[in-house]
Length: 278
Image: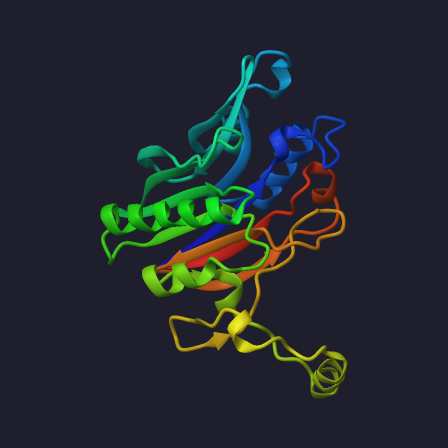
Protein backbone atom coordinates (compact mmCIF):
# COMPACT_ATOMS: atom_id res chain seq x y z
CA UNK A 1 0.00 0.00 0.00
CA UNK A 2 1.22 3.50 -0.92
CA UNK A 3 -0.15 6.71 0.59
CA UNK A 4 -0.14 9.68 -1.78
CA UNK A 5 -0.52 13.37 -1.05
CA UNK A 6 -2.33 14.88 -4.02
CA UNK A 7 -2.73 18.64 -4.53
CA UNK A 8 -4.77 20.49 -7.15
CA UNK A 9 -4.20 24.22 -7.53
CA UNK A 10 -5.01 26.99 -10.01
CA UNK A 11 -1.93 29.18 -9.45
CA UNK A 12 -3.18 32.26 -11.37
CA UNK A 13 -0.01 32.46 -13.52
CA UNK A 14 2.17 33.05 -10.47
CA UNK A 15 0.40 36.22 -9.41
CA UNK A 16 -1.46 37.16 -6.24
CA UNK A 17 -5.22 36.91 -5.92
CA UNK A 18 -5.69 40.48 -7.15
CA UNK A 19 -2.98 40.09 -9.80
CA UNK A 20 -1.03 43.04 -8.43
CA UNK A 21 2.18 41.25 -7.43
CA UNK A 22 4.16 38.09 -8.06
CA UNK A 23 3.52 35.19 -5.70
CA UNK A 24 5.84 32.44 -6.93
CA UNK A 25 8.20 32.67 -3.95
CA UNK A 26 5.34 32.14 -1.49
CA UNK A 27 3.93 29.42 -3.75
CA UNK A 28 7.21 27.50 -3.77
CA UNK A 29 7.46 27.64 0.02
CA UNK A 30 3.81 26.70 0.54
CA UNK A 31 4.00 23.71 -1.78
CA UNK A 32 7.32 22.61 -0.29
CA UNK A 33 5.71 22.50 3.15
CA UNK A 34 2.79 20.42 1.83
CA UNK A 35 5.15 17.66 0.63
CA UNK A 36 2.98 16.67 -2.36
CA UNK A 37 3.53 13.45 -4.28
CA UNK A 38 1.36 14.50 -7.22
CA UNK A 39 0.66 18.12 -8.07
CA UNK A 40 -2.05 19.10 -10.56
CA UNK A 41 -1.57 22.75 -11.59
CA UNK A 42 -3.65 25.06 -13.77
CA UNK A 43 -2.86 28.50 -15.22
CA UNK A 44 0.85 27.77 -15.30
CA UNK A 45 3.04 30.05 -17.41
CA UNK A 46 5.46 28.03 -19.48
CA UNK A 47 6.86 31.12 -21.19
CA UNK A 48 7.02 34.76 -20.21
CA UNK A 49 9.42 36.88 -22.26
CA UNK A 50 8.51 40.09 -20.42
CA UNK A 51 9.20 38.92 -16.87
CA UNK A 52 11.94 36.34 -16.50
CA UNK A 53 10.86 35.68 -12.90
CA UNK A 54 7.52 34.32 -14.21
CA UNK A 55 9.04 32.21 -16.98
CA UNK A 56 9.04 28.38 -16.89
CA UNK A 57 6.94 28.10 -13.74
CA UNK A 58 6.47 24.31 -13.97
CA UNK A 59 10.24 23.83 -14.27
CA UNK A 60 11.15 26.13 -11.38
CA UNK A 61 8.57 24.49 -9.10
CA UNK A 62 9.74 21.02 -10.11
CA UNK A 63 13.35 21.96 -9.31
CA UNK A 64 12.49 23.26 -5.84
CA UNK A 65 10.27 20.26 -5.05
CA UNK A 66 12.59 17.65 -6.64
CA UNK A 67 9.78 16.40 -8.86
CA UNK A 68 9.41 15.45 -12.50
CA UNK A 69 7.12 17.64 -14.59
CA UNK A 70 4.93 17.58 -17.68
CA UNK A 71 3.50 20.74 -19.25
CA UNK A 72 0.56 21.15 -21.60
CA UNK A 73 0.61 24.50 -23.42
CA UNK A 74 -2.91 25.74 -24.18
CA UNK A 75 -3.09 29.54 -24.51
CA UNK A 76 -0.38 31.09 -26.71
CA UNK A 77 0.27 34.83 -26.71
CA UNK A 78 2.95 36.83 -28.61
CA UNK A 79 5.34 36.89 -25.63
CA UNK A 80 3.89 34.31 -23.25
CA UNK A 81 1.90 31.09 -22.97
CA UNK A 82 0.15 29.19 -20.23
CA UNK A 83 -1.56 25.87 -19.62
CA UNK A 84 -1.70 22.90 -17.24
CA UNK A 85 1.14 21.02 -15.55
CA UNK A 86 1.63 17.80 -13.63
CA UNK A 87 4.48 17.46 -11.13
CA UNK A 88 5.27 14.00 -9.78
CA UNK A 89 7.67 12.38 -7.31
CA UNK A 90 7.27 9.22 -9.35
CA UNK A 91 8.50 8.59 -12.91
CA UNK A 92 6.34 10.11 -15.64
CA UNK A 93 6.30 7.43 -18.34
CA UNK A 94 4.53 9.46 -21.01
CA UNK A 95 2.17 12.38 -21.47
CA UNK A 96 0.02 14.07 -24.10
CA UNK A 97 -1.91 17.33 -24.20
CA UNK A 98 -5.23 17.13 -26.05
CA UNK A 99 -6.68 20.37 -27.42
CA UNK A 100 -10.31 20.72 -26.33
CA UNK A 101 -10.73 24.43 -27.07
CA UNK A 102 -14.37 25.26 -27.75
CA UNK A 103 -13.74 28.66 -29.33
CA UNK A 104 -10.86 31.06 -29.98
CA UNK A 105 -11.44 33.15 -26.87
CA UNK A 106 -10.81 30.18 -24.53
CA UNK A 107 -7.94 27.82 -25.33
CA UNK A 108 -8.20 24.69 -23.20
CA UNK A 109 -6.45 21.32 -23.03
CA UNK A 110 -6.49 17.98 -21.24
CA UNK A 111 -3.04 17.01 -19.98
CA UNK A 112 -2.93 13.21 -19.68
CA UNK A 113 0.15 11.69 -18.06
CA UNK A 114 0.92 8.10 -17.07
CA UNK A 115 2.89 7.86 -13.83
CA UNK A 116 4.57 4.70 -12.59
CA UNK A 117 3.94 4.02 -8.90
CA UNK A 118 5.36 0.82 -7.45
CA UNK A 119 5.64 -0.66 -10.92
CA UNK A 120 2.02 0.03 -11.86
CA UNK A 121 0.63 2.75 -14.19
CA UNK A 122 -1.54 5.52 -12.73
CA UNK A 123 -3.35 7.84 -15.17
CA UNK A 124 -3.30 11.51 -14.15
CA UNK A 125 -5.35 14.09 -16.04
CA UNK A 126 -5.07 17.83 -15.38
CA UNK A 127 -8.05 19.85 -16.58
CA UNK A 128 -9.18 23.46 -16.76
CA UNK A 129 -12.63 23.63 -18.32
CA UNK A 130 -14.27 26.59 -20.02
CA UNK A 131 -16.49 29.28 -18.57
CA UNK A 132 -19.58 28.42 -20.64
CA UNK A 133 -21.84 25.44 -19.87
CA UNK A 134 -22.07 24.20 -23.45
CA UNK A 135 -18.32 24.22 -23.87
CA UNK A 136 -17.78 22.44 -20.57
CA UNK A 137 -20.18 19.69 -21.58
CA UNK A 138 -18.31 19.12 -24.84
CA UNK A 139 -14.96 19.16 -23.04
CA UNK A 140 -16.16 16.61 -20.50
CA UNK A 141 -17.47 14.44 -23.34
CA UNK A 142 -13.96 14.55 -24.86
CA UNK A 143 -12.47 13.63 -21.49
CA UNK A 144 -14.84 10.69 -21.03
CA UNK A 145 -14.14 9.46 -24.56
CA UNK A 146 -10.39 9.68 -24.00
CA UNK A 147 -10.50 7.68 -20.78
CA UNK A 148 -12.74 4.99 -22.25
CA UNK A 149 -10.42 4.69 -25.26
CA UNK A 150 -7.00 4.85 -23.58
CA UNK A 151 -7.36 3.81 -19.93
CA UNK A 152 -7.96 0.14 -19.06
CA UNK A 153 -10.83 -0.35 -16.63
CA UNK A 154 -8.57 -1.87 -13.97
CA UNK A 155 -5.98 0.95 -13.90
CA UNK A 156 -6.19 3.79 -11.33
CA UNK A 157 -7.23 7.25 -12.51
CA UNK A 158 -6.95 10.74 -11.03
CA UNK A 159 -8.62 13.76 -12.63
CA UNK A 160 -8.05 17.11 -10.95
CA UNK A 161 -8.27 20.77 -11.76
CA UNK A 162 -10.47 23.80 -12.22
CA UNK A 163 -13.78 22.54 -13.62
CA UNK A 164 -15.62 25.89 -13.49
CA UNK A 165 -18.65 23.75 -12.63
CA UNK A 166 -20.19 25.86 -9.88
CA UNK A 167 -23.61 24.15 -10.30
CA UNK A 168 -22.06 20.64 -10.00
CA UNK A 169 -23.87 19.42 -13.12
CA UNK A 170 -20.96 17.46 -14.57
CA UNK A 171 -20.20 15.15 -11.64
CA UNK A 172 -22.85 12.51 -12.51
CA UNK A 173 -21.11 11.89 -15.84
CA UNK A 174 -17.92 10.86 -14.05
CA UNK A 175 -19.79 8.68 -11.55
CA UNK A 176 -22.11 6.95 -14.00
CA UNK A 177 -19.85 6.58 -17.04
CA UNK A 178 -16.39 6.16 -15.52
CA UNK A 179 -16.86 5.04 -11.91
CA UNK A 180 -14.95 8.08 -10.66
CA UNK A 181 -15.79 9.62 -7.29
CA UNK A 182 -15.11 13.14 -6.03
CA UNK A 183 -12.81 12.84 -3.01
CA UNK A 184 -14.92 14.93 -0.62
CA UNK A 185 -17.97 12.75 -1.29
CA UNK A 186 -16.23 9.61 -0.06
CA UNK A 187 -13.66 10.94 2.43
CA UNK A 188 -14.18 9.83 6.06
CA UNK A 189 -16.08 12.36 8.18
CA UNK A 190 -15.76 12.65 11.94
CA UNK A 191 -19.04 12.12 13.78
CA UNK A 192 -20.58 15.22 15.29
CA UNK A 193 -21.37 15.22 19.03
CA UNK A 194 -25.10 14.73 19.57
CA UNK A 195 -25.80 18.27 20.78
CA UNK A 196 -23.89 19.86 17.92
CA UNK A 197 -25.65 17.59 15.45
CA UNK A 198 -29.06 18.62 16.74
CA UNK A 199 -28.09 22.29 16.60
CA UNK A 200 -26.81 21.87 13.06
CA UNK A 201 -30.01 20.12 11.98
CA UNK A 202 -32.11 22.88 13.54
CA UNK A 203 -30.23 25.63 11.75
CA UNK A 204 -29.85 23.90 8.40
CA UNK A 205 -31.84 25.37 5.54
CA UNK A 206 -34.35 22.96 3.99
CA UNK A 207 -32.43 20.94 1.39
CA UNK A 208 -33.01 21.23 -2.32
CA UNK A 209 -34.80 18.44 -4.18
CA UNK A 210 -32.73 15.31 -4.68
CA UNK A 211 -32.59 15.84 -8.43
CA UNK A 212 -30.54 18.98 -7.87
CA UNK A 213 -27.87 17.14 -5.91
CA UNK A 214 -25.33 14.52 -6.87
CA UNK A 215 -25.63 11.04 -5.36
CA UNK A 216 -22.13 9.61 -5.16
CA UNK A 217 -21.53 6.11 -3.84
CA UNK A 218 -18.19 5.29 -2.28
CA UNK A 219 -16.18 2.18 -3.06
CA UNK A 220 -17.07 0.63 0.31
CA UNK A 221 -20.77 1.49 0.19
CA UNK A 222 -20.61 4.86 1.93
CA UNK A 223 -22.85 7.33 0.16
CA UNK A 224 -23.31 11.03 0.83
CA UNK A 225 -25.04 13.89 -0.92
CA UNK A 226 -21.95 16.03 -0.46
CA UNK A 227 -21.28 19.01 -2.71
CA UNK A 228 -17.65 19.82 -3.50
CA UNK A 229 -16.06 22.50 -1.32
CA UNK A 230 -16.01 26.22 -2.05
CA UNK A 231 -12.65 27.32 -3.46
CA UNK A 232 -13.19 30.67 -5.23
CA UNK A 233 -12.37 33.44 -4.58
CA UNK A 234 -9.66 32.36 -2.16
CA UNK A 235 -10.19 35.25 0.28
CA UNK A 236 -13.94 34.62 0.62
CA UNK A 237 -14.68 31.25 -1.01
CA UNK A 238 -18.16 31.08 -2.51
CA UNK A 239 -18.04 29.11 -5.77
CA UNK A 240 -17.33 25.39 -6.02
CA UNK A 241 -14.93 25.34 -8.96
CA UNK A 242 -12.14 22.88 -8.15
CA UNK A 243 -12.30 19.08 -7.97
CA UNK A 244 -10.29 15.90 -7.49
CA UNK A 245 -11.91 12.74 -8.90
CA UNK A 246 -10.42 9.30 -8.33
CA UNK A 247 -10.86 5.65 -9.26
CA UNK A 248 -8.91 2.80 -7.71
CA UNK A 249 -7.90 4.62 -4.50
CA UNK A 250 -9.16 4.75 -0.94
CA UNK A 251 -9.63 8.30 0.33
CA UNK A 252 -8.05 8.88 3.73
CA UNK A 253 -8.57 12.63 3.98
CA UNK A 254 -9.53 15.64 1.89
CA UNK A 255 -9.53 19.34 2.69
CA UNK A 256 -9.41 22.84 1.23
CA UNK A 257 -6.46 24.98 2.28
CA UNK A 258 -7.98 28.26 3.42
CA UNK A 259 -6.38 31.23 5.12
CA UNK A 260 -2.76 32.33 4.96
CA UNK A 261 -0.67 32.09 2.88
CA UNK A 262 -3.04 30.58 0.30
CA UNK A 263 -5.50 33.45 0.05
CA UNK A 264 -2.67 35.77 -1.06
CA UNK A 265 -0.94 33.39 -3.49
CA UNK A 266 -3.79 32.89 -5.98
CA UNK A 267 -7.46 33.66 -6.56
CA UNK A 268 -8.27 29.96 -5.97
CA UNK A 269 -7.78 27.91 -2.80
CA UNK A 270 -5.87 24.63 -3.28
CA UNK A 271 -7.23 21.14 -2.59
CA UNK A 272 -5.25 18.49 -0.69
CA UNK A 273 -6.21 14.81 -0.56
CA UNK A 274 -4.46 11.81 1.01
CA UNK A 275 -5.15 8.67 -1.03
CA UNK A 276 -4.22 5.02 -0.54
CA UNK A 277 -3.14 2.98 -3.55
CA UNK A 278 -3.31 -0.77 -2.84
